[in-house]
View 1 (cartoon, rainbow, N blue to C red):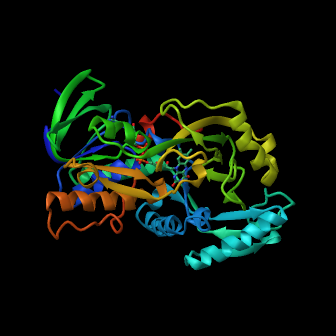
View 2: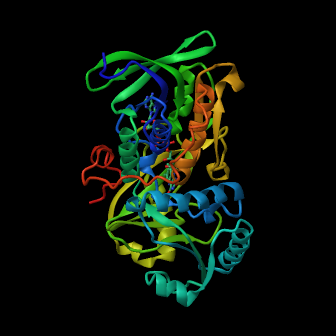
Length: 404
Ligand SMILES: Cc1cc2nc3c(=O)[nH]c(=O)nc-3n(C[C@H](O)[C@H](O)[C@H](O)COP(=O)(O)OP(=O)(O)OC[C@H]3O[C@@H](n4cnc5c(N)ncnc54)[C@H](O)[C@@H]3O)c2cc1C
């Protein structure tokens, strides 16, 4: 039998930013919690993302609600996790008349959501970011930052453990045990020992990101999460020092994020038929690199370190164009939706808003458990601990973001 306790109040499935955030939040509220991750912490969508701590501007025109959430959480993550982010700022760069018009639409939309933005002349843009093309016509400055997602997960995990959470990697949930209309616990396969054991729980939280539909099926319920694949290309040099966006509606290859000594170009959007080892096609790499060259010409001669892909956990039924799906999230209470008690699913969202998603999930858990007024969320105010150099997520994740 796997080590540790076999009974807990809350059991979280999935050790991405969201699941680890939920475990931290619950443990800080005094709830006993076990988290099970089938691989290593941060090895899912979290470790295969673009590393952009969104200002919200990317969604200001199309999804003002998601934009406002990003803006608020951006400020909180800067405050609680200063060691995990780099305050690069961001610029939306216009290189055509149509893009210039989009820039002014963006400024107006940002004003409506009270998001700090600033118009920048072509000269200011090129002074800030000398690698920008001479075709630059204007820009919109925003409060983006780059974030190391593996460091963020490792720091969140350290804080969760310090508060009493039991986080287990290499532990795959293979069954969700139901008695009538109530979920009672899970069956876990310990992948290092090759053993299976059971854990009883008062409530189980499905935080499996793009795998959320598969995990929900183990409990016999449906969760409308559509996995959507995105390809990213890591350059071996930091060609920009500011996050550079193309000033146009979201499309392929419109963002360049500086990260340490590297830069990440991205991304694409297509249905993800598989969730592990997503294939990266040559045409997808070109779809990311070619638009980046238009705005930062030096990309053409910069060596590429690697190309990789991740699956976004988009909330909602399959859409032809994943870019039109909301970046919002929902906490699904399966008692209300399907008559199955003791089971919640977290659907959708982004890395930038993972803490908020965790707060809402933890609120729902506490309300189910009947934990009283002392169960107040403190994750927005308590800083994460600084990391030891070789942290668990950083050293054990599959290397998607380890670019050296
Ligand atoms: C290409 C791409 C670029 C992105 N760029 C950004 C960005 O720049 N900024 C941003 O804010 N967001 C970005 N996102 C979105 C962001 O990465 C995700 O929304 C977020 O990381 C999801 O975290 P999560 O914890 O919900 O899911 P995940 O990180 O996927 O975690 C779910 C975990 O569940 C585990 N699991 C699955 N099944 C089981 C099981 N049966 N038992 C145990 N464990 C299980 C998986 O192994 C996985 O580790 C991007 C996503 C992609 C794909």
